Each structure stands twice: as C-alpha cells, then as structure tokens.
Image (tube, rainbow, N blue to C red):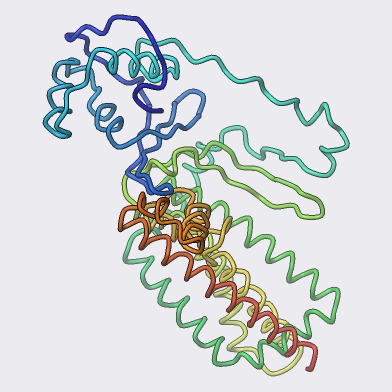
Length: 377
C-alpha cells in the first residue's frame, strides 16, 4: 500500500480529521528485503497489508484529533516535503477501499474457497476440527489457572530446573541412547512414549495460547489439524505480530518448547530415583526423545518456533526468503541490487544465512552420529 497507487478524484479538505477504524493494528518496523515496512491488520477480515515507513507515520497519527493540515505539517517537518492534494486523495481513497477508515464501508470479501465438505476425499487426508466454541474464553480460563506460574519468581526457577535437567541428561547421553534403543525396539513402549509426546505437543500449543493471552494476545481457534498420518493440535493467535514488544512475542514463541521440557521434569526425577533395569531404560528413552522434540522446536528454520524467535529478535518479516534473495545477489555480485540494502539489513541477512547454514550442517552431522550410534548398540 503506497502513496500514488490508485487514482481518485474525490476532494481531500484540509480540515478533514481522518480516524482509523477501531481495532486496526499497526506493527513495529520490520525488515522485508531491502525495505523497512509495517504491517496493518483489518479488525474484521483479519487481512494484513504492508505499508512503508512514511505511510505508517501518517496512519499512526490518524486518531480523529488531527486534521489533514496538521498531518501534512508533521509530515513536512519529519521528511522535508509537503504532500500535495493528489497524494492525500490517493491515500485516503486506498484506506477507504481497504476499509481501514472509521467512516469507510467494510471491504468486499474475497471469494471463499470451496469448503472441505465439497471435497470429501481431501477432507479425509487433510483438514481441521475446532475443539472449543470460544477459544478466547478457553484461553482465559487456562490463564487464570496457571497465572501464578507466569511470574518471574516462578518462571526463572523453572528455567533453571530445565537447564539443570538438560545438562544432567547430556552428561548421561550414553545411557539415554541405550534407553532410546530399548524404546525403539519395543512396540508397546514406543506407542506409550509417542502418546506422551503427542500430549506434550498438545500442551505446547496451549502454552502458546496462554502466554499470548497473558501478554494481550487474542486466541481465535483451538483444535485438531490432520495431514494424515499426522494429527496435531493447533492454537491460533490472531494479533501475535502486533503485540507491544518483541520480548513479549519471543516469550510467546518460546513457550511451547519450554512446556515440552516441563512435561519431562517429573519423568526426569523418576529416572534419577529409579533403580537400574527396564523402567529406568524406558524413562531414559522417553527423556532422550522428549528432549530431542523440545530442542527441535527451537531450530531457527521455518516453520519452527526457533525461526519465529530469531525473526522477532531481528525485527524482520520473511527473514528466510529475504536472506535467500540477499545471498543470491551477493553470489552474483549484483552491486545494483546490493546497493539498495541498508547496512542493518545486510548484517541481519548475512548473520541469518550463516546461522542457517551452521544449523543445517550441525543437524546433518548430529543425525548421522545418532543413527550410527543407535545402529551399533
């Protein structure tokens, strides 16, 4: 959405006081390729749009108190040029078309795709099923139940316990690998472990929703999604990208992996106290596979939570795609393309490229070592 995209002829009086529709959300500045953009979300349709920094400067001040004359003066002071009538007409017409102004009609919705019910064969293979009628109310109830645990005086000791658990497990990696081999070799044990890991995955999704609610997020859906043979729970947070601070968004993204680790704590204590034998071996296998599951969620590659954490820390949208485009331009030595990237964007994309390459290499090496170790035990 840029100034000058649409041509209109409506008048734009200087005393007009534009105000955004109630509930319109604006994101913080985000890197997207060589540009810095903001996201704008319509409260009714949920559609998001990208705008530039200058457009955001104007939208953020459309509160009904300032006239177009006031906005134009502030814009001229900030950017050294005054907007003409044509610019105002085009911008206001575009905002009205998108339904972002309070006095504009709702935008016409896009044609909805055929429902899954019209494709029964596809519905059997892939689909989703809401589990609760009011996901926001469910998240609120869960939040009330665990709210005391979300304070710093509870979270920090739990994180210390998780770190101590994972360090202890790393020091006993051989025993854990033996336990994993035991679990993988016994179908009943394997089914029990995977049932617990599936429950951990469900709690992982609910943790995202509860922490999002804690920080002002809106949970719109909780349900099951299947892509046979996989069936997983999902929890959708509508306004995640528009929450107040990056730190809050990072906490929401990390909550799932923390929950995966918390689920393992009782089994870790049981493993510490259990005598040598079958039960201890089974617990070791569960702890190995569960820890592997938790750490997998933190891998900084899309679509995993670790990628979301890194993207939020970098303040970037489409970080992987933008990094690939920047890398391609670098390998081609395309000076024209590279000249359009500000210094911060070059640093962010180069750092993520290095991180992604190192992560992939480490994952391949670790996977090969684990397979070799399990096969030779």
